[in-house]
Image (cartoon, rainbow, N blue to C red):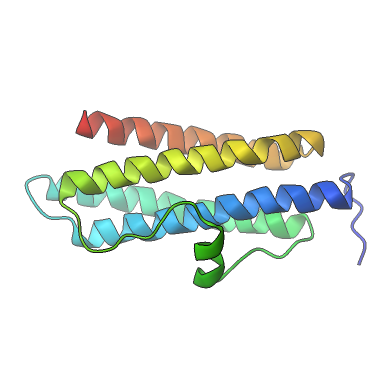
Length: 155
């Protein structure tokens, strides 16, 4: 079925590709954050356990919004772990790091999500896709604030 939303098919595909990369990185970050929530130990347990829960809860909502935007563009959203591993730059975690290493790893992963979101901006601008630009701007704000908070813990 043809889609008539004022964005060319080529632009929709390019935007969806960028959003798919963001979805994959966001999902991998969600998984990493949830893992750390379950497995954090040490003197900062309570505060980190609570903070990680807030972060993965926010990410769960964001993942859905990103996937639904891809679908609104007429493309299929990647939805399997195998697809995410192929696309994502955020890597899954092996083992259980110490608490402050968890924070450092999440900082690095949030910074990667910021970079991935920035890489998707030009296609959205070229396609005059304000809805996807707005979504990316929101994600940039959330991950920038999260990175700042994580950076403050380990500095």
